[in-house]
Image: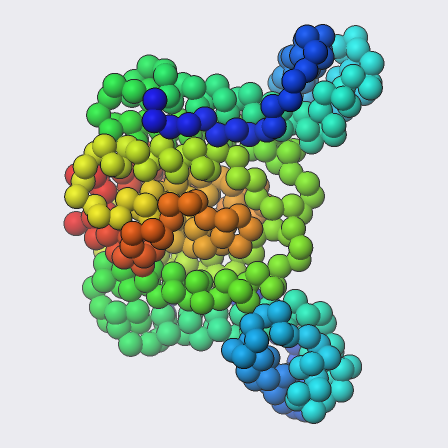
Length: 200
Length: 200
């Protein structure tokens, strides 16, 4: 296991009931997100639906944005676990070029599915979140080394590829995508073309 | 000439002396930037060194960040003009793959040389600036079409490549680059490897 998990938040020791309440609030948040979207989530509403006090919700997450950060963190952890210990070709065991393709496809889908949650973690006008970018970079770098393509500088190439992958979606959080984007095909297919031509 | 210039600011009709004063202040700003870096630039200092009133400097640029936006805008215009009407291989006339390589190398250098100025155009904690990203995307798309590589989806590929090019440097405005970046080679060389392998 060569890729470390990226810590997305500070772990703090918590009492068992605090942990349980937080899990319950997160589960309720997922329900509300599925039913009403991010706009439907409020501290008050969550606490009420979970049958807990508002103070408990504030102690668990700090702010409303903190709820979305907690949701994103849990999903990032599940995603990264699938990459590191899950089934091939996303997980270990497949050819590194196939894993690069699989990683980019899965990551694009993950980011697209999480745009709404990621946007809700942002402070208004704040910087683009770095969530997962370092994991993507480290993982792509490792697979490029394994693929042994005769490329001297995998450091910079892995930075460029990780930004090519995460960048269009992270930038979409703040700036509308170029008018021509996603008109013909998908970012997933385009990533596959890029990697397959680069690695042939 | 198929690539339109990206308007980076709103042109406003100005009186001849206002235009002259603004040019003079910009020239002084370039001197101070070269001598003392971005931190050395203040509205007061510029006006004094240009022998103009502080009010003239404020009318010309609005805010201190406005000075840096004006500097960046002028340099972007010169860069884009070189791409559209300058000497090949950056300008027209060379093979499209050679132009892609030349564009990426020139653009990386341009962005690295302007990081300090771009940072100074930012509002604290504000979004990543989109300066030039749309031009890069449009230009790369045009060259990919001309290169006729048999790639169906040049829309998404050109988005991914333009972000691979501009992204590492735009993100460096807010986030420190990954520790491994630029350790072995240069972003320029890495871009050339990426394009040459993609287009062979």
